[in-house]
Length: 229
Length: 229
DNA sequence: CCCGGCATGACACTTATGTGACAGTGGAGC
DNA sequence: GCTCCACTGTCACATAAGTGTCATGCCGGG
Image (cartoon, rainbow over all chains, first blue to last red; front, side):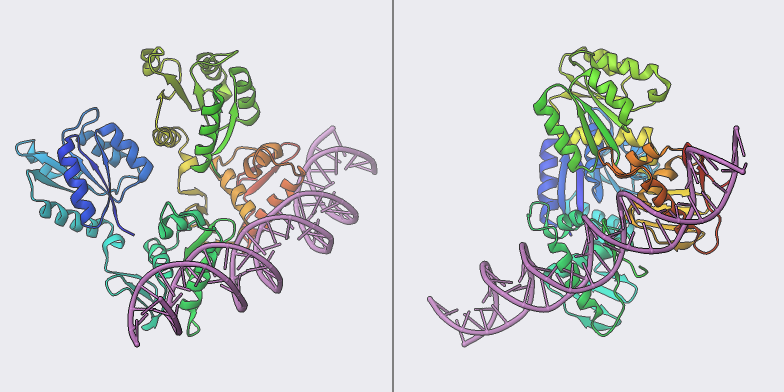
């Protein structure tokens, strides 16, 4: 699953440029044109990271930042601030605004991307990590390979994505709808019960060799990756 | 337990649209077509939030608002007002009508949903919170798991919802009717005594391992989560 | 001591989930 | 273009889990 980024920037040209480039770099990108819209879309879409302009119409970047930090469910959301040279750089530098990092305009796209990657790695390692681990299960994204207790686990593409998603938040229960969205994409229409079948296949593959079933079924709710039943 | 919303809107097309979308977003939705019906259903169903059209037949939105604010048991009910552009926007903006927030028609469904979420978070955090605690009992909605003094408590879906509801207001006594509505949904018709049975099952599960019964029976009134006996 | 309200175990029934079978797809290799 | 073959999405059916009702017996308050 590609990490999602919300760009809050009022300058349309820059906004478009960012959208284009970040998309090219493998992120899912959405844009908002002012602070108000930004806050709404954050609630609605809970992006994995926010790129935030310092100066914005309606609700300023600093204010957006403050509000995000004030709410528990967005408190840890990574924020990368964009500032123009001279714009109270000192304050931003100290990052007492609450941003996690900042870039001074004008900037090289490559620098921005690098900082975004670094920030994600720091705050949401499970999104960027080359390898995810849960107990004795290791999923390596680069080589697209899964092992359990060292032995290779053969998975089809769908089961791989499914496991990848589950491993990002072990313990958490996901409804079939949620899994459908995450693994098949939000605009695919297949039978909900198909999820069961793939979970079944994933289980079977992971159990090869007599290991315990790492997936918990939560009746009338969904599934979660989680040893104890 | 999904938060419940009552939509009071006379335009059938919009009403249906709202019902469909809010349902999709995970709310329980009911609709009323005018102010009078709205007030009745609020009494009867005590929704967690009301979406209220400004202009309504019989009893206007503003009047509904006023009446809700006048009664102690609905004084704190979150109200989100829908207004058409130009409809005394200033008054609404000041929110001296008593509404907690408003949206100007036409609006994007995503904005409405975001505002509803925000409003609920502000006014009824216990509805949205990921984990609830009461004494040694912890209910985690994300992992759909309950523990007591650290040990896992196995609950069926109904018992889980029941405990979830009770934990939102520990100490408060709920009638069987109220529990029925909250746990089974307002349009389900099962024997009232069934509540007893599920409370019994919940008790049994929570007592596993010799712990004290955290549920108090209030003769001829109902039940409450409350350790002092 | 009596009575309505409650607790509880039994049970017949619903529902949700696990699974093997199967037919359709599309790509790799020939 | 054709043939395999790994993968998919659906079904149907088996099974497990959870539900709603009752009958019975208990309990506390008047």
